Length: 261
View: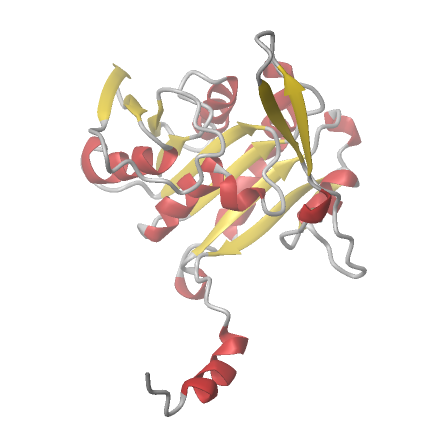
């Protein structure tokens, strides 16, 4: 099995080393193509206004001066010799990618790009209590990563009716012995109206700002990714790239019937 490894924290990030450890237990045909610099929050952005530069760090190991999406596109279109990868693994991200984070996350977006190219793709993120973090913070990902990936592949996901679906896996910030298991979850949501924008003043007297995330919206009966993290479970969330809201189509079609300017 040929596996492409990428991330949004940068090719030299501790989480990339963890991802390589995980992937080495699945295959010896590994390719690393990741941003040269941290690209957290880059989302599914693509570099179009300047050239993409690539630095090679060894056999099958490349740093891309660009976004996670750039990295996957370069890997699939230029850098990986021979046949295409059978799997894309993105991560292991420093910090969780839950709820609406998936729309901002470069880690998830790299997996989106792999999925768009027809390659089964998994985003992996490690929730953390404190930052900065060292390699020890990734112990849950190390302990559960291989088994979770193997189980996902064993389900047959990535083929047939599951095309266009990527997997978003989050590991809770607990001691390995305290993790209760794995839950398949829905994407949760936060109350963005409760997001805090904190203003501070720098040493020169100019204002600057920090964002604080809103509270979780709790929906009874819904097993969300946020809830799984809070209760000590590894969260596995299938995300579908087709954003069409089909329930709206009939009403919209009727509303525009006979429409003229």
